[in-house]
Length: 67
Image (cartoon, rainbow, N blue to C red; front, side):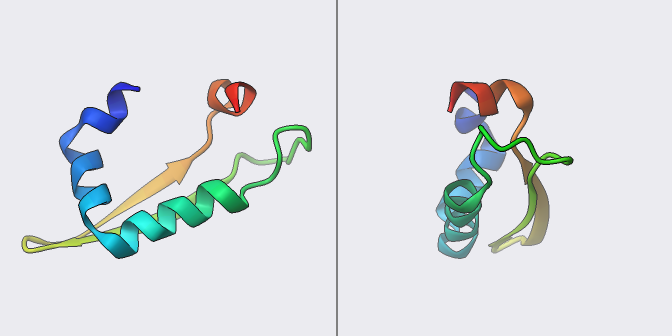
């Protein structure tokens, strides 16, 4: 998982509120067996000394199959 080594991932994991939002999204997303019409997405706000940054988390089909 190269994405976890990125600067953006480090910022997201360093912010407790953003980390909790992402964790809740991953835990509460629909099961991979139930095929929703749309991919599950969530907006996560990362707050740091430099301001706020909004990112959109989504589960892509390849990752959904692996889960």
